[in-house]
Length: 378
Image (cartoon, rainbow, N blue to C red; front, side):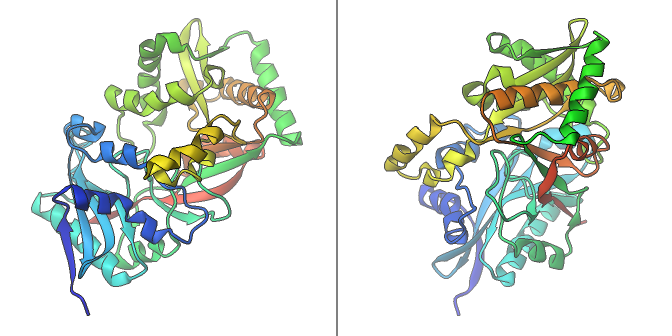
């Protein structure tokens, strides 16, 4: 039997093996949306990736059985996050593995050694360097593909993590689906609540101003940190990270579906919706080859069925003011006008006291659940 070894990637050929290994894991999975390889190359390049520009350090590894790749993992330190939180924690990501527990154990053993050698107290993941990329392991929800910025993983990953000793780092992250084609009593109640809030003439809802992009980022930056600070493992968003994460929105989003709530001209809420481009990327083979652009281009010109709503942010002092109802109601009205059939609300933590309650109150149903894991290593 060939020997199992974990080796760092050392050249361009091995980098491509690392990036394209998921095709081996998901070759028979119709729900998998292949990652866009040109973007992945940039993300893991120390000269170009945003994670490295923020001072992060990462190493990338392939598990080999003889000459055959059987798994991948990235071990990293987000120095900025550790400095902000006071944690001594490493992160791991790009975890992919054939259905063989000995390979998974070898990859986890390697991540633990990597962390111990650098004095870390714990490891957490999976994240693909960016906390918004490949977030967690899919625990339930294999009846439809993931939407943009959400991940997908085989059903056997959960067993690999939990049998090794990983435990949930926080409450599961939830994706909700809301049918926009039906009028329901729950949505009628939402509209009524929003109308009562509007009648107070206290808040205004406006579209994003893409011609003032930097100023809009400045408005969202303090809001996102204040609105999420109550979560157990909240990591403050540096402005540069926020700007990099939002940059693709400017290219694909309708500014009338990026909503701001204001009081006396001051931003108090933010509610962004973007087309679910995974409906097109599902057919693009990760743009591994030049001819993969041919089927993608016409699909990119089509209206997607799903509008992906990635966050609802409101300053805590306004949580019970009705402004969130106004944002939800306005978004639903605008999405329906543009022909969207359903809305994805993702991802929100089960630890979040407000967003899951709002989503369920208005008839949204959980359709995917993701779990981030932690392991003490010191």
